[in-house]
Amino acid sequence: MTQGTLHALDARTTRPAEFGRDALIVCDNLVRIYRTEAVEVQALQGLDLLVDAGEMVAIVGASGSGKSTLLAVLSGQDEPTAGRVRVGRWDLAAMSRRDLVDYRRNTVGFVWQQAARNLVPYLSAWRNVEVPLALAGVGRRNRAARIGELLDLLGVPDVADRRPGELSGGEQQRVAIAVALANHPEVLFADEPTGELDSATTDEVFAALREVNRALGTTVVVVTHDDAVSGRVERTVAIRDGRTSTEVLRRPDEGSSTAEEYAVMDRAGRVQVPKEYREALALTHRVRLALEADHVAVRPDRG
Ligand code: ADP
Ligand code: MG
Image (tube, rainbow, N blue to C red; front, side):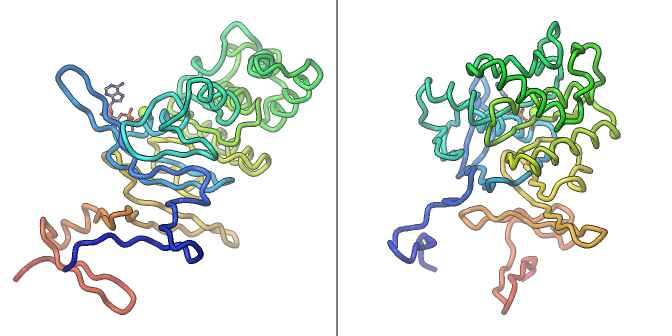
């Protein structure tokens, strides 16, 4: 066997094609290591992820798998330790402070799990949505039009005059989504926005996110620990140990929808074989690979 790297070649330039050139969001071997005095935590361990403009993607994974770290990096709140991360025209690993402020204010919107973190408690729903618009210098009339439009879209026009404490959990999160969308971001990030909600209210918030994605064309990346969510969005990406491991794609067809689960192959060709498969065939350490006409076989190494 020869040692070498195989690149996809761009036919016109014969230079290696850039990974994810046409995607809106590109994470390429993304690494984030937290260092404290004694310990080093590898929160992201070479994560690859592509998201196209206009997609809605759910990120699932156990607690501690790196979901929040990924969203913090993508939204410009945290810096990667290594790897490439791009959102639109922004290279997040090499941005000036001023560009970061611009990016956070105009390119991305963010919704947190804790409703209290998203909304100012002493302002009405209407005034909460007005805050980012006022900060961006939008004039009074345009502000009013935008606030009305967003509260309508999110199905909460009738709570405009109420403060967060007078809203249900689902209403609070829908107002929070309106706040995040005020300045027409290209991408909406939401980190477990339904973590404190019951399942009926969770459905309501996911319906609102889908509606935002459909009606405004905003790209939506939503983190959840709830596995049932893959039934609610078209594409679900699972993170395990700081890497993307599997994807479920759900293609709506007539009436019912079908879902197919895929394993994710990283750029070095690594694929994680699910634990059930490994256990069923006692696959450990060394396996046999065989190239067949239309698939690759993985067999236990039994002499
Ligand atoms: P998730 O959102 O999937 O629960 P996180 O991204 O919050 O996972 O955390 C991933 C790992 O990184 C965990 O082991 C967590 O303890 C660690 N971690 C997260 N933030 C920090 C931090 N600021 N300092 C040290 N370790 C952190
Ligand atoms: Mg988290």
